[in-house]
Length: 136
Image (cartoon, rainbow, N blue to C red):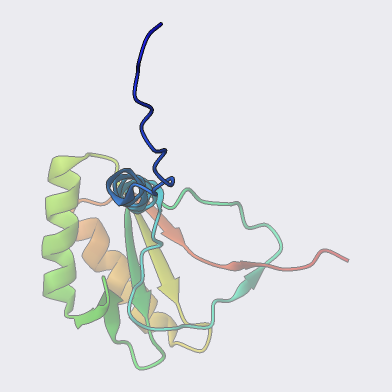
């Protein structure tokens, strides 16, 4: 009847282009979905508190060392620079929180000086970061 020539079947092939597309889409998804914690640039020993409340990690985070050095966004800054950063953040978002990670061995004068700097810059929502003490 019909004289149809049968083609020889080809062996299956793996298409690389769609596979590479999927890998790049997954890479982009994970890059967008990942949340990186803000790093102040220095490790401080926070004091313990039995009445500490959890804070939302939105806003500005500053760290004060035992020597009174102020760190923000991975680098050491002066009080004048901190004031400028806080003024800019308050202008962009009034009521922005300013979280201070102060070393538990730091002199109180360092903390008070930074609190004064933050208040003079217009910050009204100030918090001191602590660790939750075990309640026994």
